[in-house]
Amino acid sequence: MLDSTRTLVVGLSVGICTILGSYLFRKWMKNEESAVTNDVQKPISQKKPEKKRRSTTAPAVDYSKLAPAISTRNPQLGVLLKFINEKSAFKAEQERLKLSGCLSNVTKVMWATSNPDIKITCYKIMTNISTNPDMLQEFVKPIVPLVYDALIQDQEDIEILPNILNLLVNITSHDDVIICEYNLKAIPQILSLYTPQINYQYDIVLCALKILINMTCSNMDFDLTLVYMTMIHLLHGCKNNAILLRVLTLLRNILNSETLKHDYTFDDELMRGIGTVLSSNEDKDCLEIANQIYRLISDH
Image (tube, rainbow, N blue to C red; front, side, top):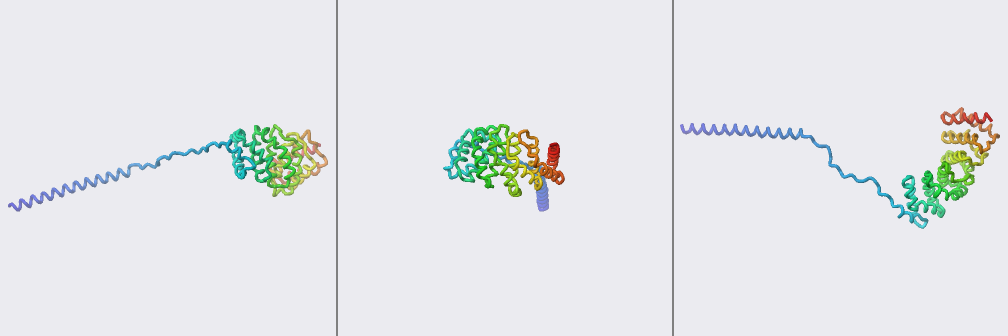
């Protein structure tokens, strides 16, 4: 009887332990599943901690410290002038370059140097500031005699000449004329010299034409005979519309000018050239001006 009772008690204890263990296991599993579910459902932030942004604004250059170094005695002058050239393209910087004395020293270097690379960079700086009317009288006008000498002496220097011509395009485009026709008398000769080489010296020919157009707008005189002969050559042989448009604009301006005296002996050749443009060109602007020229010459 005692053994039976002991067996029953042991059996009940085992059963209770089994049930309790099963219950605790199920509860633990439920908690684990709940934890996993919560981890899955919890949104994962994609936002990374913000980094402190660095300022992208470059500190202002103290040009007053650079001005004394703009001298032919400086062995690093070429590097410094390239930096000044980059800055001089911006109007806001031009005023600061002016006040610091940098631009005055650039003009001094232009007069003093014989180094072609230094000259070219100086011309580029002057070309940049020559777009600003406020800079013309003080910095650009004083170098006009130097530019004139360079036009005469450096006509065949294809490295320096385009830079001189770019400057003159800007100078002659202003209403405030700071240069006279005497200083530009070499332009027709330069146009004539480089027209046969137009495929290689396109920029020189284009700039020379632009300068002559600006001269007609300012009622300046120039060698018409040489210009007519060059224009006839270009009307017949040039297929570049940018060049042709300037040739046609120049011819129309000459024909409409009250100060330039049109030479009628060139009319037949000019009309043939205009006929070539009208029959072979499809550019709207070129055709429009060619028709205007045709009527102007026909009415003479």
